[in-house]
Amino acid sequence: MTAIDANSFELAHQMFADDIASRAAGIEIADLGEGHATATMTVTERMVNGHGITHGGYVFLLADTTFALACNSHGDRAVAARADIRYLRPTRLGETLTAVAAERIRFGRNGIYDVTVTDEQQNVIAEFRGDSRVVPTTS
Image 1 (tube, one colour):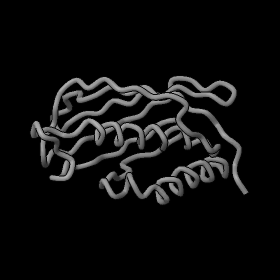
Image 2: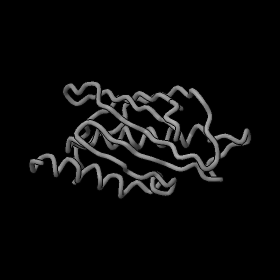
Image 3: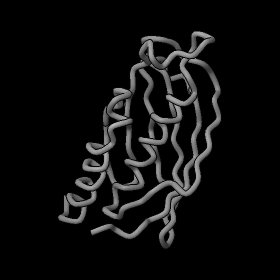
Image 4: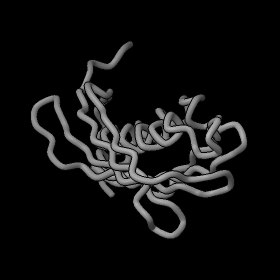
C-alpha cells in the first residue's frame, strides 16, 4: 500500500469514527478499498416499523454510510450530491444486512457509486445510487 493509499483509508476510517449516527445503528466496516466498501448492520427492535419490517430509513442509512466510505477512500473529502434507493424486499428483526459499494466513475470533483444491500441469504434488499462531490477541506 502506498502512502497515498494509507492516507486515503485513514480519511475514510476517521470519517466513520466521527459518524455517531452510523455507529449508533451498529454499522460495522467489513471491507474498505480504493473506490469500494462493504459494511454490515443487524436489524434491532428500534429499527422495525409498524408493519414489523425494517424501516427503510435504516436500510438507506446502511447504504449511504457504505457509499460515504467508498467515495472517501481516495483521500479527498467527499459528500453526497444526490442519492436514491429502490427497496426490493423487506427484512425483519435480527437479520444482518450487508451493503457493498462500488465506484462506477470518478471525474473532476464528481463520482458515481452503486450500492447493493443484501440479506443473510444473499437476496437483494435494495439498490442505491449516489453521486459524490469532493469538497474543500476545512482548517
